Image (cartoon, rainbow, N blue to C red):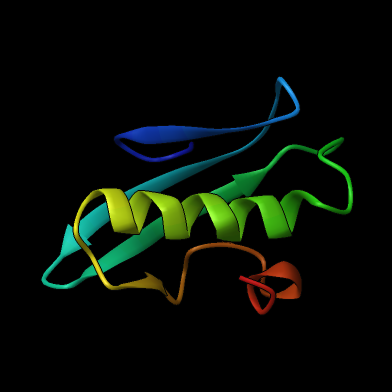
Length: 78
């Protein structure tokens, strides 16, 4: 349901989302992303920040979202 290797997104001590990501060349590619129903309005910002942090930690210089990654309503904010 969430992907093969899922990275949990924690914010303020609670689970707000999950991401299945892969390192591809110089990018961190998010294959699938899911936000919890009760994640709150800051979840998309938290998710984008977490992706940037993970990209930097894995020596990637950008984050890419796969076309099929998630719901288009919040993907634009990442």
